[in-house]
Image 1 (cartoon, rainbow, N blue to C red):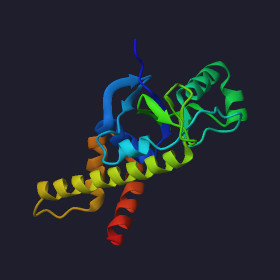
Image 2 (image 1 turned 180 degrees about the vertical axis):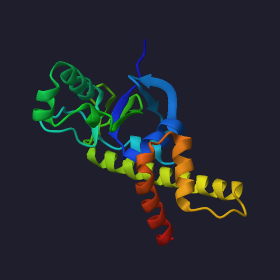
Image 3 (image 1 turned 135 degrees about the horizontal axis):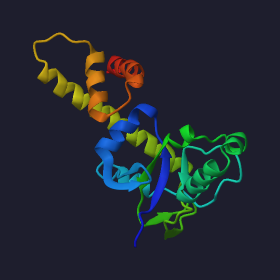
Image 4 (image 1 turned 90 degrees about the horizontal axis):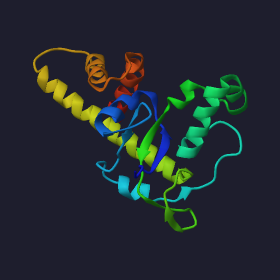
Length: 193
């Protein structure tokens, strides 16, 4: 059986529902849908940026973690959650912040060496920052498109932007506890325009 090449990426809480709905590809990794970024313009190039093959020695996970590190943390939490929280700062809630990202079969190290993507391969620092930027842009583009659709559906009606945000959250199965944060960021972005 061939397994997917994956890496776990920490994702902003209010973006997870949209990613699962818009970018989930049907395959499940545990209880999470595997996220495929290939439909986003620029994703292929970002996934070709240098990766990292070193497991962290200690400390809390960063913005990305390899499949091996994720598995080790999950097993540790099953065995001794108190120690995992004390030593690594990891809880079940911590791991819920990460989504599995489908990766290419090969990766380029930061030294420019091409090698197979293994369970120990992790997004490099520059690559992680580029992925976050790419996903933020795609997410807010999706919110913008939804806003346009919502305006057409409610033509002639007066509605507050928070109603559109609430509808977007329902559509993407995003917890309504994030509505206010989304509304503030949406308004801030619209003021910039």
